[in-house]
Length: 95
Image (cartoon, rainbow, N blue to C red; front, side):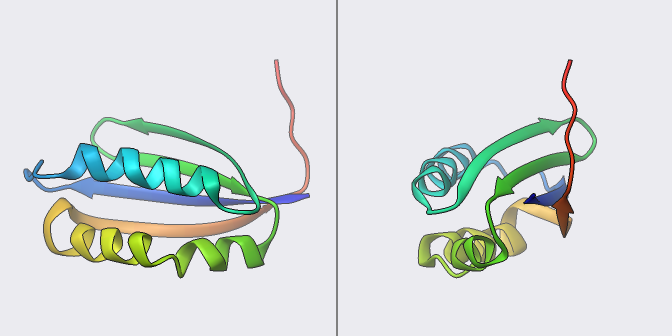
């Protein structure tokens, strides 16, 4: 069992610093204890799913100062809207 944080978003037209911040956030997340991986796609909406070993690991990532700053910039410049869902993954299948 592990957890998935599902982040869905719609973007504004602003690109200023977005790509660089996304790269930085990925590198920081990878360094967090309990981080297991990430998958992402974007068309009309963006969907990023990150995987974590525990709810504590998710909370620690949410409280990361650089992540908090990126969240604030997202609300003021990059996203029209977003939603975060946290789900427990009890099983997985792969082909």
